[in-house]
Amino acid sequence: NAGVTQTPKFRILKIGQSMTLQCTQDMNHNYMYWYRQDPGMGLKLIYYSVGAGITDKGEVPNGYNVSRSTTEDFPLRLELAAPSQTSVYFCASRPGGSTDTQYFGPGTRLTVL
Amino acid sequence: GQQVMQIPQYQHVQEGEDFTTYCNSSTTLSNIQWYKQRPGGHPVFLIQLVKSGEVKKQKRLTFQFGEAKKNSSLHITATQTTDVGTYFCAGQATSGTYKYIFGTGTRLKVLA
Image (cartoon, rainbow over all chains, first blue to last red; front, side):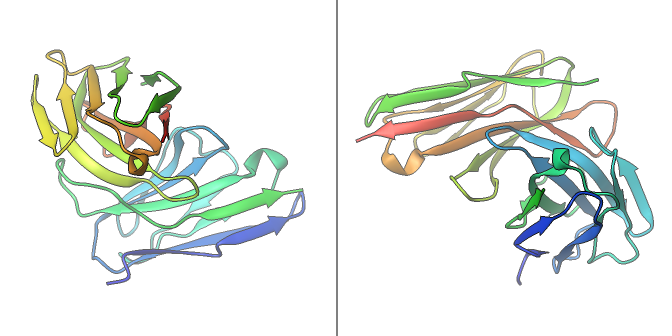
């Protein structure tokens, strides 16, 4: 199992550009999450999904969109990149229920100039 | 909204000294998880606590969940250089949501 994979690893965007951060898990997990981590800070939840076709907002959803058409994939879309979105983005998944762990991907480091 | 704070923000210790980080939630939690993140890496799950007053041990690490299920602590005995990293708690509210709110983290540096 590859676990949770994220692409790209690094990306530089210009203000106003758009991009999609990819996240795939091969563990058949129901729940998937997107977090952002600003330098020296904790993780903030952007969006999460409890299954294919179901998504919900987290703490900081503005400027982002998600979709969950399959169990495996949970892409994060930035429509109009802003410098405030410079961050490291982590995708995570977990099987389900209330007593299990989140498995994190390696992260995507995004810089918006 | 729910907030989770951790103290201290930073801690430098000499190798062999003990270390403790504390996690406090503004609301009662259903459960709490602890993660470790090495510099440049991603968070890695350490443990989950569910019951009020629960204490769990993993070798030199001791985790506690408060009686009111609003606070938690992680204690490391006799730190080693391999303990370097940032320790995060993550709480799930009792409202039945599926999301976790991460604490602000404690960055541990161990001096050899």
